[in-house]
Length: 249
Image 1 (tube, helix red, strand yellow):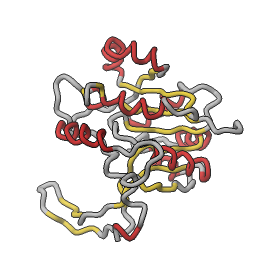
Image 2 (tube, rainbow, N blue to C red):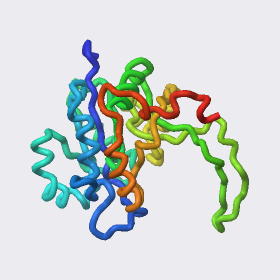
Image 3 (cartoon, helix red, strand yellow):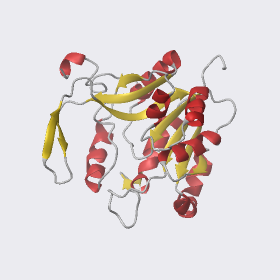
């Protein structure tokens, strides 16, 4: 590994966006404050001196239209385009294969998470270098109910120790490659699950509810307001509302 760790970023944008319910856009490509959602996510990494390469992974059926609409952005920003697979794990594996050889750590980020603050990226990158595997997450603070197919409550789930996974999720490149090599099902819903299966611990870094994932059209309205109040570089305050464990016990 080089003296200064070099990061590569995979923007996962190959999902079906079935819950977004828009005939014209998938959620990473929908307009948000005058720009596509994925562009907001990408720019947070492109401005960093420790990020060597950014790869966006799109579904095969979206590739032609994506190039037609965003080809100029890719060229100007130096973003690499990769084609996704059937499952998320297949898509991220393809993104990993597109990296240059000098990438030491891989950050996987949902292209539909446009509201990132530099401080959150700083912290999860540092922790990944220290431990080999780290991810942003927030503790579950509401009462959790398990519900059956008929929407009847089956049980109330103890939320102690439960956290909701976010991205970026950051891993040593060799560790993530090994996790993919040993995975045979490709059904993992995030990369941390694959790494956990290797026996390597994944450290949680407290994130923020502002790091929301666009799922519905209403989320776009919320995200537009969040973009206006995101913590600026060098500032602290609302960036980590869950940094103090006493806030969620």
